[in-house]
Image 1 (cartoon, rainbow, N blue to C red):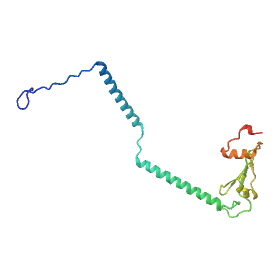
Image 2 (image 1 turned 180 degrees about the vertical axis):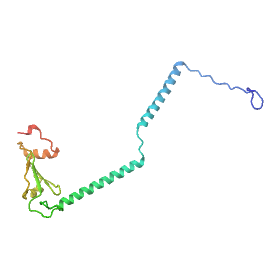
Image 3 (image 1 turned 135 degrees about the vertical axis):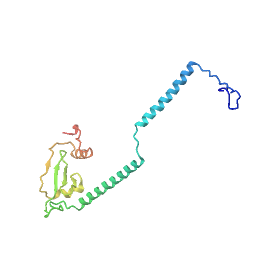
Image 4 (image 1 turned 120 degrees about the vertical axis):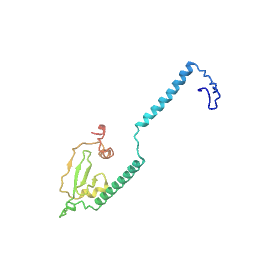
Length: 177
């Protein structure tokens, strides 16, 4: 009965086509399929190590960055307005009761010869190399100027500007006399 169908007639076996392949062709086919699977697995491993980032998280981070930039801009604007309205006199802080006639700038002479001043109330920075800041150096200050030492340069103006542009880096030794 195993060889019969539901109607009782004998089952007809279909002829299966014979596969003729050489051993070297079989080896090549197997190695190609293994290489393809190995590549698929390697790609899957690489992809599995990349952490999933939720699109909502990216959106939240962008909102946070935008908010941080706006906050920083507001703080800088507030500092600029505070510096613009500061009289730069001793005792001009809101907590002080009496305002003096002396300047609130503390001055420091760099080894390049440039003088840098900092208001103790609003943190405004002034420099002797900036002509717009010359008025701040005329007022008498109760603070003594500090100094970083004295060096002699062949071109002091160039040394001052070079020190500013390099973020305070030293000028090359050949320029020092």
